Amino acid sequence: MALKKLSTKVLVFAGARSCDDLPFTIRIGNITGLVLEEFWQLGVDCQIATDDGSAGFKGYVTACAENWLSKNTWNPARTAIYACGPEIMLAAAAQLALKHDVPCQVSMERMMACGIGLCQSCAIEHKTTQPQQTEYKLCCKEGPVFDARDVVFSKEG
Ligand code: FES
Image 1: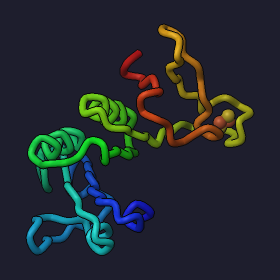
Image 2 (image 1 turned 135 degrees about the vertical axis):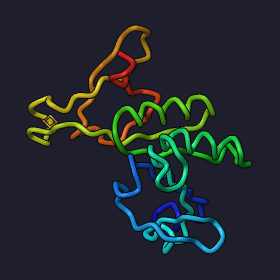
Image 3 (image 1 turned 90 degrees about the horizontal axis):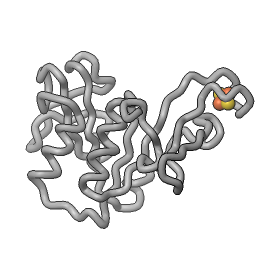
Image 4 (image 1 turned 180 degrees about the horizontal axis):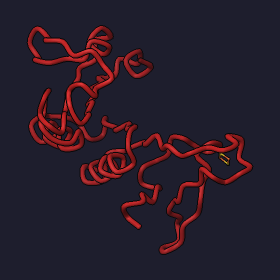
């Protein structure tokens, strides 16, 4: 909603295994086909993806976003991706952002034992300016949102 207040065009891509797994209310929009009620009421456009094709685009949400990017006109200099969800999807979103040279922020999830930076259970590997060297940042204190270019996603390693 903060982005919408800045008069920024916001487009939400929501994905799930199937229609029943989407944590939103799906309705038929006037022109645009299926919309998510919670975003539609805020005037935010949506694209829906389901792995089984039971609603919207059939396939992963990142493939849906890639499909949208290839079929629409948009300005990379005025575009950013904000992603939350399973880490493998965040890694795919990071790759998509890299491919199109747009910034991407990912909201990471970790089990958090203390939540105050003591136990180190929420450490996330990050790239450094030194090739082949990484460092760890704490999701609870330094995140949970990170620049996707800096994160070493588990599927990479
Ligand atoms: S949860 Fe303990 S350091 Fe982050």
